[in-house]
Image 1 (cartoon, rainbow, N blue to C red):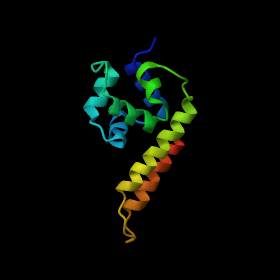
Image 2 (image 1 turned 180 degrees about the vertical axis):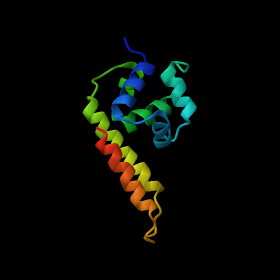
Image 3 (image 1 turned 60 degrees about the horizontal axis):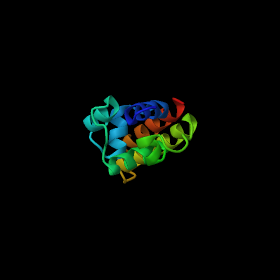
Length: 116
């Protein structure tokens, strides 16, 4: 039976997100997510599991215990891409001053979508 570290790594890779970007999107420390993936943290707290599951499009019970159904790689990729776009949009400048940062955000989000 897969451990949480194996399930997390599998779905993070299916999502197309790197560990650092997943950490940022979830509002978690990069080292904490790496420790979970390595198996150094056997039982992460519920809030951490809920954040990861939400941004990766799986249920918290599935991520933590393997209970329930895995929605499939395509569904995980779609949810993660939407989470990335939301994250990048929230970081974008709000004024319409013609700043090129807006173009960069769209380019990065588009590249994530194209990596499927």
